[in-house]
Image 1: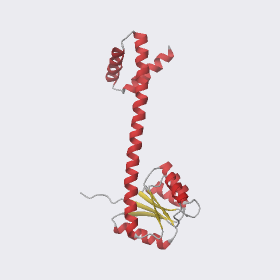
Image 2: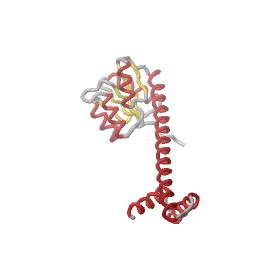
Image 3: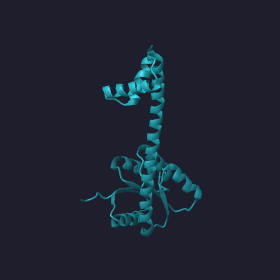
Image 4: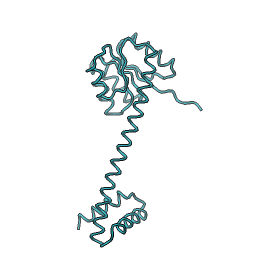
Length: 194
């Protein structure tokens, strides 16, 4: 079975660096789907081409690489490797805060590029997994709070025990083919109308 090659977008304004990056990526089996020489066009290409990852130069004309990274991460998060000519801690911190998963100091050699890309892909996947886990936990907590509130309403209005109120919530949810959260919200809403 053929796996699709991961698609890269190169955002770099130095032609020689672009050639080096493209060659290293294609040699490693990645597909370069676009090249942007300005930050604004990099943002637009990230939108339209939907690459799997981006190599982003910090010093782009117009919108700089950090601002472009920040905007891309707000619209459609993806692994971004920052390319910089400076080994400045403040710059690295800004890039990480903007959402970059890795950075490389120029001049870039292919032996450092591919491991950085793989690191960025792995870090991004781990981050996405953690964010999904957090979202799931928040959802579970919200559902639990709503169910507790709905149980309290049923216990009070129908004079049910806690266990009976919960069973009624479950049965109503099953009968209506809806989530426990949805049923709890209906009960809470109905109670607020009375």
